[in-house]
Length: 74
Image 1 (cartoon, one colour):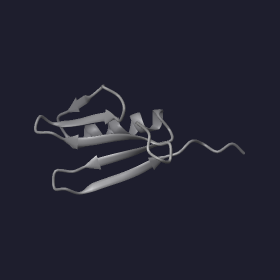
Image 2 (cartoon, helix red, strand yellow; image 1 turned 90 degrees about the vertical axis):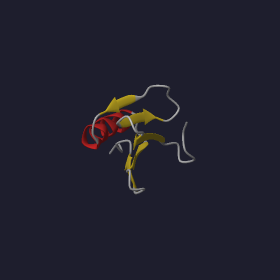
Image 3 (cartoon, one colour; image 1 turned 135 degrees about the vertical axis):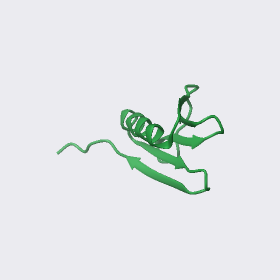
Image 4 (spheres, helix red, strand yellow; image 1 turned 30 degrees about the horizontal axis):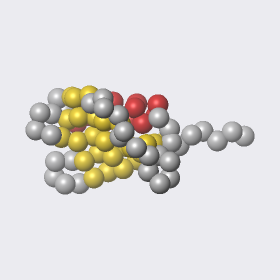
């Protein structure tokens, strides 16, 4: 699924069995034992699917979002 800006989002969140990473619109789900590993994988996935956004949903309710854009040609 793409947002109104054309970005695909990569979601990193906890679900009681660890931390998962999922590209919206994809059935694939990667699972990691800690948030650091999940964020690292989420960043790589977001870079592979530019333009994209990485959304990290922490267990305390905080949410952090980063954007990855296509390189602009000179």
